[in-house]
Length: 228
Image (tube, rainbow, N blue to C red; front, side, top):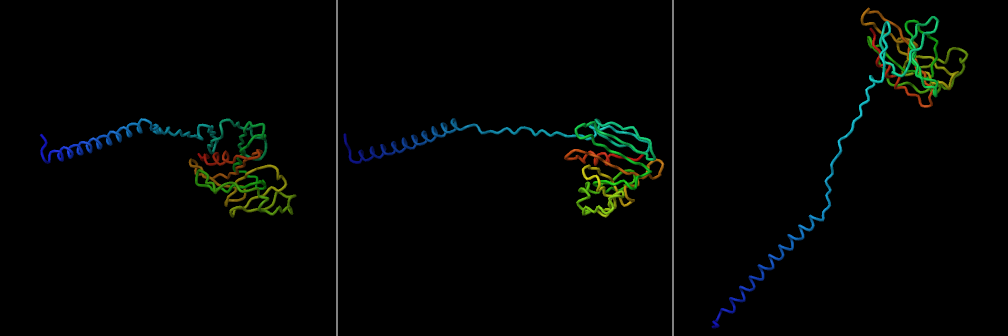
């Protein structure tokens, strides 16, 4: 039996049901969209590979030579050169590279060829029983002696680098000979023996005929030198 007000209540219930149904449907659609979106999303996880660090140990590539007054590390592939007859006490090592005619390290002890002219100079200092290197080898000395050949018939042109004197070889511009010098004198550095407490004079040279000489071999050898 129809009563006044009941139709209005039924209509209100139906509206509420449709609103609830719409909300549930909307939530279901949003949930479905989220699930579908996640399933289609590419996996972008990046696994960073561990860094590979290669350590080069200079000592494993050298051989230690023990001479009467000092020890020095020379590249293991190099060979000792027999000392020639003459007034100088020398120690010479040479590489076997035939392409560049070989690199060579030569050490003069006590009796120093004061007139030995070089193309580049490396300033060193005696630090008790070892050497201290003051920077790197200079440029070819022709670049800062202004090509002065007025005394080319002599041992070389008098030159200075970083306040230290040396002889610049201007007659042999094609070679590349590095020589050490210090405030102790031209071609001279004084080192102290740790055992006998005596001093010795040294002159070090490095020759490399390659187009791009590798002076690090010379630097490493000098840094390794220790007086006995």
